Length: 367
Image (cartoon, rainbow, N blue to C red; front, top):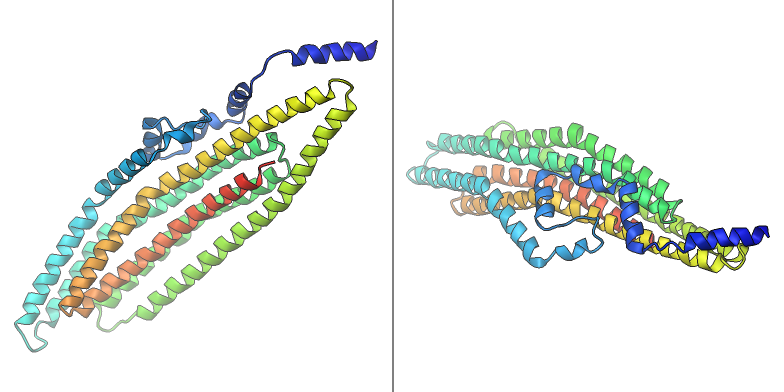
């Protein structure tokens, strides 16, 4: 009699129609995913809002087309090209003026003009380029802040979708990396870029100081450290995710088997219901995970384009300086370009580290 009563209760419970999309909406709000857009910067938030990109809609990824992406990139380029181009034109004018002055003398009488030109170029570049350096550091810290808000939500989705072993290990590593990135950006990258830029200008201006070796050493050390840390982090996360995902898969399959065999008659129905819920949470996991990847890309895209534009402008001016045989001028421009290459490497490394990590967890988390 008791078994019959239990069966009736279960049958009544299962008779309530619950669709996968309803489960998706309910769990979307329960895990706090509806607040993710508050962690985005204004530019990314506006782009997402204009193109109806919202993880609440499972089909949001279809809103990203080549047309709106290219249009967004073009707007970023036209908005970020003004300062580098103006600075490049001003530097080109100084190069032409210096070349004209030195062309009228066969002696070293106009050596002073060369150093004055180098000093003027250094002052112009330092002022304008430093704004991009601060913007790059701000973008890195913005990605770190977004990850601090995103990781707990994504970990909750992973846990609810049955990946109870993967969720804590992933969240611990990514939260630790986010905190570390924020601290390194504030207390290491910004001072390092400032010292790098100062040494570069001093090497070009002062005839008594040649810091080229120091500058090159800083660049090599920074690149080696960044590459090593990024490789270690992604490697550790990849290994942990692969092992933990296998454990999660075994646990989930065991739970479905026990549910299907331990409950008479209704066990198979409950097993199918569990599979439906698991599939819905899998959709939520993929949707939110890819949303995080896309958000990181669009948060870093403006500063990456700005740094690339700066490097193109500096390379053109370097070619112009070499044409008129002005090694001091080209030396300082090369040094600034080298500093920007290190900064661009830092931005790409941080973005790549977070994006690859999320991609690894998303792909390995499929049961």
